[in-house]
Image (tube, rainbow, N blue to C red; front, side, top):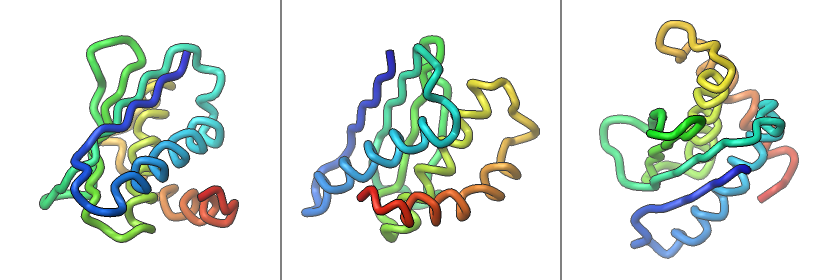
Length: 123
């Protein structure tokens, strides 16, 4: 069973839209990053204001549980790209292919995948 839970500070007028963008982007990543066959995958996303980074990913307490914290104080494109970047980290953990700090692969793929996602006109 896959679970996506999006929480956060809904103080701006676009907040409900941000929640929908987040959900659709993660669903696309699950499919596009080859995570669709994973039975138990729980992703919690916290949308909040961050000043020191765009986002980060942590392992949760349960097996195949991940927590993404995404800054909602960034441009639309960067917001989507950050979600995709952090989902690449989820894939690294799920496949046990984390190398170093995991950033080389995430930085390499984030723009290409963001462009592909936006071209598919899902939002």
